[in-house]
Length: 277
Length: 300
Image (cartoon, rainbow over all chains, first blue to last red; front, top):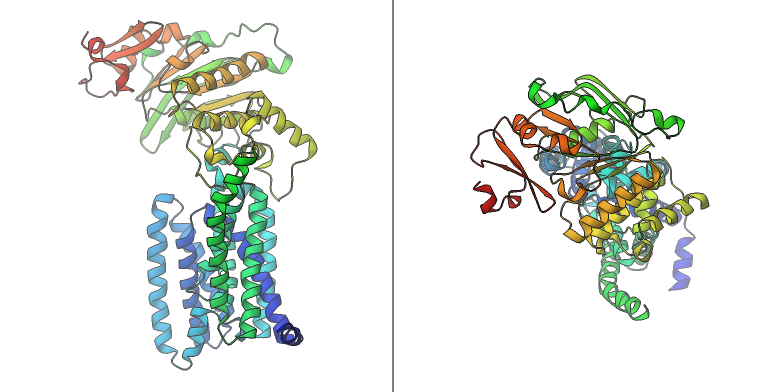
């Protein structure tokens, strides 16, 4: 089995896939921490679904589906940002934007009746089918997202855990919200390549939610979130190469197992710590 | 609403003269100076033509019923709510966002049990949370965090997840977070809300002591004056756009308060506490804290 893996990793397309997987995982792990802390799972779903519409739209025009996805999710992020800055209205704004966007997607899909496989790939993820041109786009977007998050890491953390004091201390809380939505849209477009539109939450929620169970140290939580996303993504790709099962299945399973283990382990760890103290 | 002679006369003008003779040079500057300041959101006037000067080192209690614009006063000082007219100077300069000379303590709102944040991290955000980029605190900044934790005696639980701490412990960390930047002005927005009596006293004492020892100015928004009576050197009472400012004994009187509420109100002193009693049926005013008006007193 090891020999088989080593043999597979020798292929350039496998190397490309793993590279893309690592970048996507780092982006997803970082973003996931804030998605969980800001309760934005619904927004993630909307960004992915309208991204799907963008993707099918671009396919119709004979353009790159990855670029279409990015365009769709970015536009959605801007619309949500413009319409729903207040927490109370955010939920309904996300819902109605998603419904409208997906309605367009249905139309595009009915016009695009050539290859249903491409739509399925978008919905459930198919990193194996990413072209080398799209791979380059994924790398560029991932780097921009990681750099962007690095620049706003501290004020984003402040505005997320303690928005009232952050505003009083001069943090531009509204600007940070919109910038984060844009970075989230980019992260969604990345993660969809691995797990697809319908399974997006496995990479953008599970790592962050698991990490919260493991530590109260914010820096460590971010690190754990990235490590869990890496484990799920790279592990998922390798297992899929060895078997005939799809990548998404393994990614979602690994991520879920991590979360359950953390949930079960948390009370145990706390009891141990209490016993030592 | 415009300035109402009944509530401003005799209670406001006295505030300009500082009695603090031995203060350092930059402390001659008043902590804040409102001059005919009006704040309105659209048609709704929050307070109008507010004029008061508060020297540094004072403990100003901001009183009034809910929704009377107490928090807006803090937002104006923080540069988050621009005045509709008039002027405001904070430590000799117009208000600006992110003024490092201002510390801010919000109302207690519990953190989620599992939020990955320790008390130490909350205080650390007070040092560098507003800076762009990422990175660890410098050794000097970490020392400041430790000192701030010691000042509020929060070191024993500084590494616990913040969501597992009691309300009083969380508020202590909030004060450390506000004081870690060594501010000259400390703004507190209902910091005692939802705390029990013991914690209310502890928190008020921490803030009052800081003000006395460091000659720091405190603006303390509260709907109940009693917990801060021992510390407040000035009060401003805001009701329906009207206001009265001055020494507590001058403002918290039956005469002044009746003028503010535009209705007969009685101010009673019962066992060292101040109780404001009005006819609950009186139109147009809303007395706070109904549990402060037990039946026998209210029937007077």
